[in-house]
Length: 72
Image: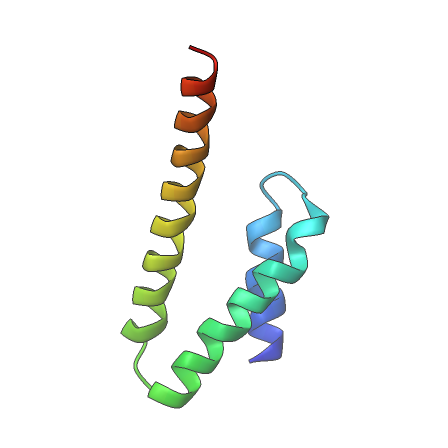
């Protein structure tokens, strides 16, 4: 699980080489790996990853919208 979490983190930082985000991606990968380990169902961590991404996208867009509204 730890090796998979490290690889998950490395895969996610290779786009922009943002090394400061590696620990957070590794922590997310560890959580997803543990979810799979205990549930033995691949759809559990996949669903959690989808939810995680949706929250991240929603948060980003809400920050952008707030910034745009401030500049009006």
